[in-house]
Amino acid sequence: MAFPVIERARRYVAKCPPAVSGQGGHNATFHVAACLVHGFALGEPDALALLTEWNRVCVPPWSERELRHKVESASEASHNEPRGWLLGAGVAPEPQRRLAARSAPPAKAASPVVAAERFLKGFRCGEAELFGASPVAVSDDPRFDGAALVEALYAPGELVNFVTAFEAVTEKSGEVKARPVGRGVTLARDAVVARFRGSGSDSDAGGAWLRMNPVDGCGVADVNVTAFRFALVESDTLPLELQLPLFARLPLPVAAVIGSGGRSVHAWVKVDARDADEYRATVAQMLALLARFGVDGKNKNPSRLSRLPGARREIGAAGDGVQRLLYLNPKPEGRSIL
Image 1 (spheres, rainbow, N blue to C red):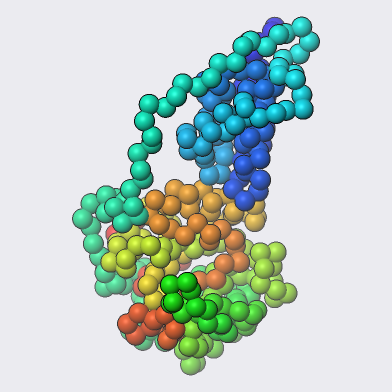
Image 2: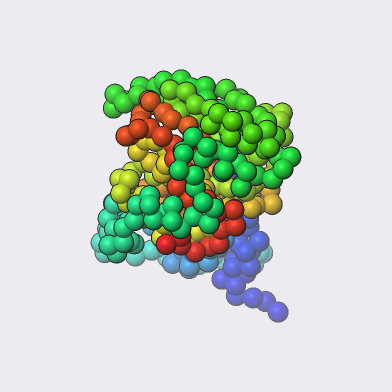
């Protein structure tokens, strides 16, 4: 039974691997577009329809505007093979049909602040509401927040890494920021808990940082991560008065919310991926969905550092600079905190 050309093309691209951000996604998408408009000699409207079907498995999915651009670029590009080379012997390609011109430019996306306001619909909350909703009671003394978080979110025997060394960097805006440097200190979970319970979380003028996922003790890179458990969600774009209610209302499995002591709040979202590839794909998709809120899209690697609760920063501090644990839930579910 001979299938129509468009069905053959659909089956062909269904076997093509999905595009994944940071792993040659642009080239993968252009290849599929070229197979459709040049290899199977489909008209651009049919090619766009099939590319849109294939796009559902991409991480993150491309926008309609981006897919359209890929089809038009593949149609206009020079190719080594003749047009219709995937049709088979004796099948002549039909004349190319182009996409109709767009009648109007796409609407400008709302700013992160506007997007957050629309999502929240007037909802507001503060630190007190998060403290009250926390399944694990947060201490009145923030110095011991780090001990509480490490004990709740890491298993006995796991190796935990934290960093206090930093370099002061002046941004183009003139603002001075502290950036973590070096491998820091790696200890077994119970040793870290005892250390932080005895004298509070380690800290320096830049504050301190904690690696969200446990490591193997041989380094602090992605290859040294032993459990792909948490991902970091943060936004330096939104004002603090919107960050707290946003993280309280997003339907995500949030295990911890930590005040950075500066202009942002860090949310630890539980991922529990099987390996690094699944982690990156899952986190990339989540961050893409949250991009409209100004969430940092760079937080895709499993060895990512977050702020260590219980530490206190001076560089870039807002208020007293205390990196406060605001919410702690070892068994979060995919629903909003409040």
